[in-house]
Image: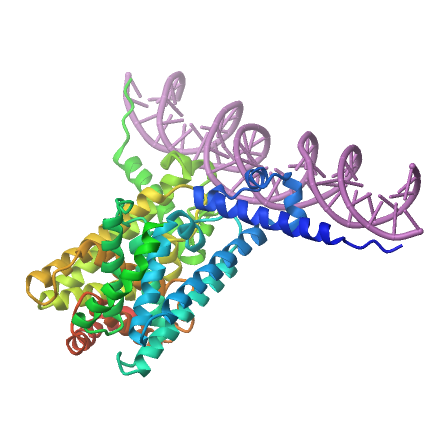
Length: 224
Length: 224
DNA sequence: AGACGCCATGAATAGGTGTTCATCTTTTGC
DNA sequence: GCAAAAGATGAACACCTATTCATGGCGTCT
């Protein structure tokens, strides 16, 4: 007698899994990775602690998937913004702006995904996450270089450095603390984007123009 | 009957304290902050675990002092290098190069001081450490701005971003892994310094010159 | 030299959270 | 409807390292 999982059951299982992941994400957005503990997450997802282990082998796996999920969303947003730009330099500016706006909008989550101490080993998924985002930025830099807008350079290293600059200055411990004010937030985004563009070799005057262009469509995001 | 501590005893106590701190530093340089555990550190320092607590109230205090110590050394090195430079722009280049060379020479230690997950709260001392170093860099940027070599800008934010770029690209998880080769190491230092200088507004041509100048005296450090 | 107290010791303790598993509940196939 | 199996439960367990504290040794003062 073969027991098969009914559609309904399959759906319920998938829903539970999503609920647990969503609960973990909420917890992280709310109180950082430190708040992602099995028992509280289980409560948030309306399941028992043991149930979590029917869906994720360990806490490390749960957090790893959380990181992967957030990373996927981020990557998609960057691509969308960059692809909508008129040229390679604009695309790069749009990509950088998108990252800046996103990390600022969800500072705790970003900090948790990127650098917050966690009691389990999630280096692998953090590494993968960084690789994806940095790779995308590197591609955009490369496009601008090939278009003759930027000097030749080690694009991988440049992309990594750019992300480091964004993260440290916007969600790191030295980040300005009054970024809840939308105006200040926009200023910070523009300042950092300008730095980033100049770093890869965009001339100052041109960089300022690109920053303004890139910030305009991002305004909606800033408000959200 | 009042018991006073003899000079000899005072010296021995101080020596023990230093030995414990040194042991912690060695452990961190060797295996990152994860290796800074009370029992192993005590062994390294040739004392018992309980003895550590006669010198440091808690592990958090021990690590905090470790961070402060390394930070002091780093700050001194930066100042020395910058003060020896002929002008404000050179000083900035020298400061950036110094940071790059130092973090590369002691990658594990740097990572531990800066960002490695620790099981106790050391955010305060990490914050202080970053503030000191970033403050120094900000001062140097400011000097270059006032000398008319750089456009006006938010120097604090710029300094933070620069350090973020250096750290992420040189000791972060995406850092190139073949930096044990001195030539590659020098290339990485130069590339990142160039990015940093351009980011704050140094013209590309001039930046390249400054980078070469700044790297020359730093060669000795690279070799060490 | 003797007594008193600081310093060092390290085995035992504490505390907190991820993980397990015997038990109960729900769903499935006949 | 009823047995069988998958799924869910949550209290108990396990583990790991910081911290404590009763004890012993050493240095200091009279």
